[in-house]
Length: 453
Image (cartoon, rainbow, N blue to C red; front, side, top):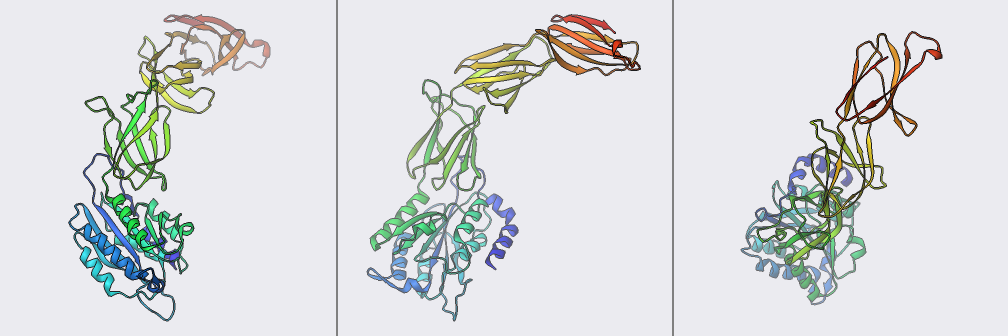
């Protein structure tokens, strides 16, 4: 039932999930943070722990922390509780949004919790599924879940699967899980950021840390280094991906400020990032963690140089670029256009006729590599009758096929690079090999040659 429910919920709210956690610019206005506290009120929370029951200690500590957040700007808090009802058997839907999101509602949350008595079961997965409707539509909100629990899933749901699915859909960021009393880390690690509170003072410290991490303004900068280890490379597209979900979270064009330093950006410290600098080819830095509340520079080595294919005519030639020794193309550059590449060795194919190949082209950092494309010549091939034929280039005795002739009586014109060429042909009506003919000609830059078959 629960598996069917999550499928229904995710499909129903698909349009919502696309905009809950949008791709953002890192210097946009501070977003609204919405913290949903998912509180365990199951029967095991009534057990004695340290100075009181687990439930009473958790409520008292949470109440103190909530009081400190009263009046906090750009913050709304909500409360979902599971397991508060005693039933003859396990109730795997015993989970309720007790306090919807709102500002300055901390006293209401405390009052609701103080009136409850832990007595039911532990439907963790089902409770997470319900957060789809708890987090109402908001285009720029940071949706945060703090789960406070002392036990494992007691129903058929899989909290890890549900958590990862909802993270990938943008319902909430990687959640925080506080385990009271018991060592639950191996179970909840896959679900989010797990904290073990084995003793009462540790429980308060953990909650303080989570709240501070969630709300601390955090800055960073991208230092894109040149070959001299100076952070002066810039004007490239940078993307921050959420490493857990694979979704793009931030997208911007890197810039240097008025002092010539990488500009400061403000990003969410709750996410571990994979950073991609869209140079050619792209440079990746994975598993980047930003320390909450501190300025954390991110250093990426990406020295670049320039490549240009110069030709003295208006003809535009596509130039296929491959990394040296690698077959897959990484870019197609147009002639007479300068392009930046990561310093290194490249193989190049220019789509002239015939194609021109340059192997092991060196692009040095802060240097421009220039490749000249010769001016082509023209050949006009005329025939008085329909023929079967091919055009070849003579490469040191080897016949390099260029193309097949169209074969009708209309003259064909080809723009060819300088060199020696052959036309091999015979009449289309002929049935004898001996009727095959061959004509050789030479093309010089800018010259026109007529070949009559």
